[in-house]
Amino acid sequence: MNNTKKTNWRAKLHEIIYEADTPSGKLFDVILLITIIASIVLVMLESVKSFDVKYHDFLNISEWVITILFSIEYIARIITVKRPIKYITSFYGIVDLLSTVPKYISLLFGGVHALAALRALRLLRIFRILKLARYLGASNTLLKALKASRVKIAVFLFTVIIISIILGTIMYLVEGEKNGFTNIPKSVYWCIVTLTTVGYGDIAPVTALGQFIAAMVMILGYGIIAVPTGIVSAEYATQQKADQDKDVDVQLNSQSCANCMTENHKDTADFCYKCGNKLHL
Image 1 (cartoon, helix red, strand yellow):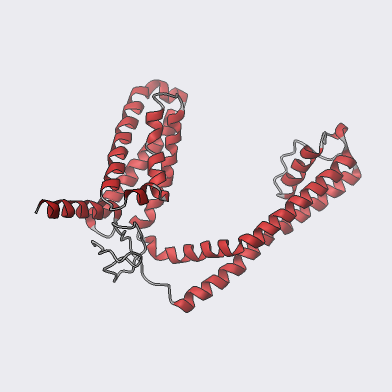
Image 2 (cartoon, rainbow, N blue to C red; image 1 turned 90 degrees about the vertical axis):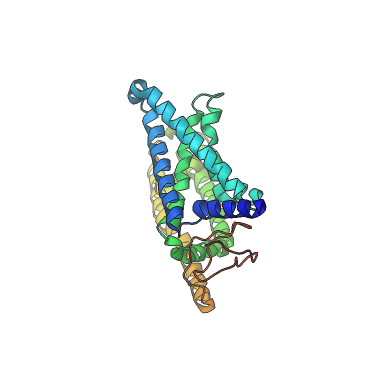
């Protein structure tokens, strides 16, 4: 009987914490997001010296209250899943931990509490609250396209690096130390920032030949920007067609399996598609 009550208690808490399709789950996530935003605002205000001097005690106490609440939430997330390590090592698990520890570490090392701004990553949970899970299919398609493009993009980046080294070396020979191109690494740096159309202006060619090469590098930069975009776009179109053929564009919800932490289940699913565990929703 006690085991049943314990299981029901954990199941109910899991439903509230991990799922946003129930009123209690949605309320929990909304409160969580408001708390995260409040925490980020507090950290930002604390960085303003004039404001911190005047309201330091209030900011410090508020931040400690929020940190303790996040600590309790983090522990609750661990005890409500059957495989805690799965959550702890997951993306959200790591983000939740990183958003909690800075304040504690600040007791030993000053200034580290500013890292609490990492809590902004927790705002990604808004996808669940606003029921944007139905768009995850498109994000998964984009992720597949990026993975499929990684070899082509790697070759492209390697080519850009080679071009930068060659052009940087040429500019070093053309301009020389007297015009700011004191060494090849610095010349390569100039080539990279010019090629990416950033152009900080800390180094600029003076000779006519150097300016001509710089103009060619700038024009080449505009062409280079389009290459990775075209590669990913082509792969995205391919992956999108493949997904449509597989009929994977289905309605998903925020149900999270208590056993393996898998999300993105179909609205009609009663069991986890990965491990077969019974879904509580």
